[in-house]
Image (cartoon, one colour):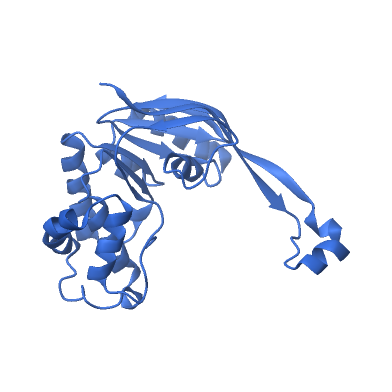
Length: 245
């Protein structure tokens, strides 16, 4: 299998301001407020993912796993290093991202799917499948601002898995929703994985990752601590978390 994702010596830093002044006048008068420290979230990480692999990114809060996913989706860019992703990408990074609250669920399907690169004709062809998977037939023409967080997730997931992407990125979104829909999502992810879609998941649920993924990457303090089979990586990770507590 060929590489579809390649991350080479990537470093990402963020400026954290101690007391950022909101207005220009305050910035001039109280210039000391503009002091900041530069924090390295990812420190020279490298890994590659082959076409058709399902990979989980794990680690404690603030370790850099969600930042890694945002770099892969080009929401943000690295300070140094390079990232290569080959193929159509679909992403579930933030719940309801790309949805307009005053538009209906149906209208938002067209907007969201077009962001992923689908044409109007392609969306027309997939519309009934998306609505059916979401289970929101009764509410699909209501404004999405009236939706619960679970309904948001249903609609977002239904769109993302129906765009026939070659690469699917997911960040913790499966933590929302009822047990029946979560199981439906798991089964769909396994189905599209078996068809050759590359999947990268960020999750604190090691059980979720073990159900879907054949590989886990543990990020610790901005560096890759371990990369291998989920059962082996998760055992070491849990040992670390117990020692940390």
